[in-house]
Length: 368
Image (cartoon, rainbow, N blue to C red):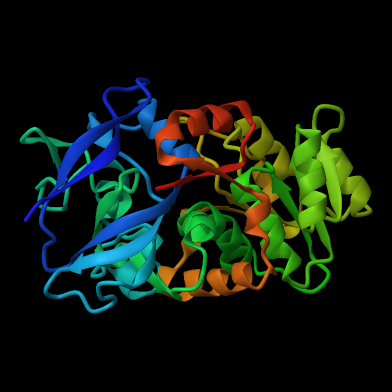
């Protein structure tokens, strides 16, 4: 049977989010019906809603969901009705990268998560008035009171953890943490630079504090966010409204440079400056996504002393391995994600979006 529910629908690029009644298809063998408890709002949602990616609209977005399982398909083995779950990205589970433990680089990642708006076979998961609309966003489309979710998109969590706090772990938090833990893997005494003190950047700062890195440098243009970065683990901050990034990193490190950089802004000038701050054998991880076709010039001779630039999707995470660890760290207070979160009622989604754009909120989380 189909499920009728309320969803925040984007009717056309730039039109914003408006609540509408939709129907969810009956769960297939590998799908799960989840009653949503909370969902984080991410810049990726806003970019798609604004028309930056060719996702089919009208459509339902949302990809940091958290909720309770209501029904499962016949082949589902990860969860059962009543289980509490966090939702993240989906993947095919069959390609070489999936089999090798890197599902964020699945061969079918773009159509399954960002562009398709439907299942892999083209069938709709969300309809309205009998007409298909865009759904299956990150295998979930969680800006709704119920979501039809790929089994590979969900991770079971303990029933006593607060879902309204854990929702951002599915994208923003695991992206920042994964950049540090899965890619940079800082050695004792390392210097890390994080450009951008938003949800992803501050998650990287919190993750870096749990490593043997001894200098953690947060970079932003908003003094309040830089102060928060210090409270969350940054040892130094750089306000680029007054200070040059590369010159200040050189001063802090005695000319050595940064062993690792997490670039979250998507600003190509910031990315170029961050790469220029690398020490020999240093690695810059590019997380923020500028417009398609954007390029950053790199001096080849500067790169020859072992410097690297690496692109990153979703922390290069294997979600069933990483998300439970993040849940434990957040629940124990060792990663105070609550310092980033501001809660909104589901009906206040447009206000939440406005607060992200204005900088009023770092990580809005909708409560259903």
